[in-house]
Length: 185
Image (cartoon, rainbow, N blue to C red; front, top):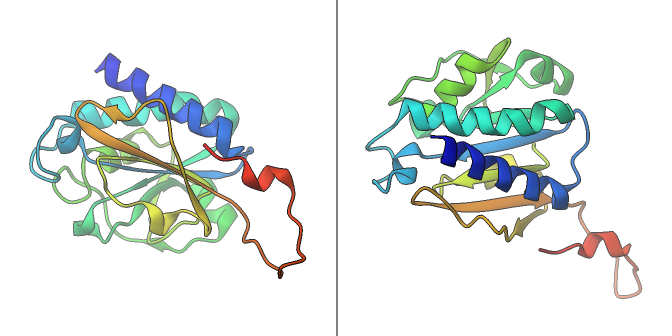
């Protein structure tokens, strides 16, 4: 479990380096603990792995004042666990569901248990996020999403995808853009 937690921390720290999140921003997680074990998504959820992943992320995000939103599975319509403070600050509507091991998944269950004051919301607009096990977090990352190629390619047996966002580019052929927009990875 310590290896999983450490790899999650490394991936999050590297993504934060490129995503340039600030205090009060939201970071989204989608994860399949089944995939981390090399099993088919949704077929072998692991509470221990869920806690290791969420604890690792919280150790990186909390000191920076960045909120964590954890996506549940399709059995709870991909709703997310988030701290009430963030839900209220962003004006997200609260929904009624509590994640369970096989309806929400191990990571959302762990996030709910580890949160100070958890609430569930249907949708979030995060500035960046990690997808561990191809759970499709793009719907929760602010448009325009930019894939970030991390050094950490896998956690356990699960493929890792990282996303950051940037403002939309507007204008015509004479428009100019700051170099920071092209900070690619």
